[in-house]
Length: 479
Image 1 (cartoon, helix red, strand yellow):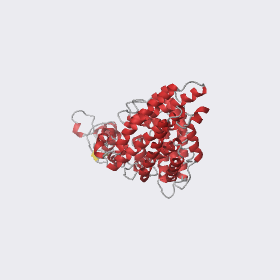
Image 2 (cartoon, rainbow, N blue to C red):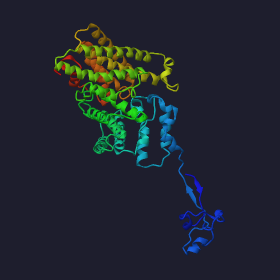
Image 3 (cartoon, rainbow, N blue to C red):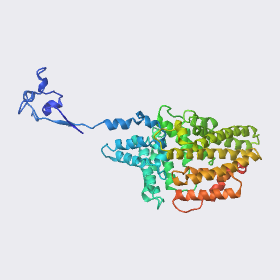
Image 4 (cartoon, one colour):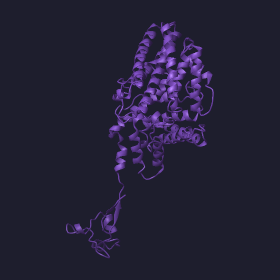
């Protein structure tokens, strides 16, 4: 805040925007700096205060604000979140220059949580960075978003305490406050469908996974995913020019797609699914994008299968459609596997040169796990609707072995850094019919689940069985 010399005119002339003696010759109405009273004040017979006294203005240095307001001007901002270490660090330094108030303290607390590190066990930036990296500069624009950020910070703080991951009083109180703020925004037709309000919903979904209760987290019985689906359906559009909106709706729609696999209450028409996951949101130039597009077909296929069984219609067309997506998924999975086991020097086309080989490998572990999950689900559905097929059974056994190997390799990143493996293990358990493989998967799932919950616990067997039924012929025949 440097001092800048200001006018030496008296207070009365300054108030009237009259310049000082240097301009006096050009017209007779400016302050002539005379003491004890300037000629203008004497003529108007008013009290003259401060004539001839030097004053200074103090101005904020706006450079850090400019950089903060337009992070996309930095080429590094375009890199994937899991490699955006320099960008997040830079943003933290820029925000810390702002004088402290309630909003900036909240932004600084979030940025501290996003501090990059190669220790991925509790890294928010690793798991949700593409979305979270855009939020600090939006704090203060939406009460639901602000409250949700506070809830996320409190929830992650207790979750990242290895000795006790149980929810604390503070985390539950801030979560409750965030729910109330979200309810108020949803009741307001102006703010209900704002991107910031939708983002608050996504943050509360993350908080729920940290705070518990953990029952029903993968079977859709918590209700949060269903609420997010209703918001997506009501919104129905997004601004393709807004990077934040693209990332937000891609993240939220992917979460809704996965929950739709095990939650029949989430119901969209095929056209609505295409609107939610379109070419603008998910790029097919990368294998990961092609996998998400395969996923977008699955809920619609499952809904139409149930209708066809109820109405006793032929399933031949649906079997053929599912086989097409299954072939695409298998081909894409081979590409992802190649990236996972390739030399880092061979995959620089997808990653910036500054990324470490450890982060690159961890990233492709996550992509391969997601691809395995989607391919396994398609395999399970095909076995349910196409009758006996020996090739599908053999492939399901192969997928199960791959999941176990991947889970062993990713265990070093538990609990948060490899939380994606929980859904993959659940899918493998549901799809395999071999009791030995099922037992091995359940043991591994128990290790992951205990690490995430924060205490030794058994995997909820009823939820596994319910998920298996939703993906099996028994549940589809019931409709």
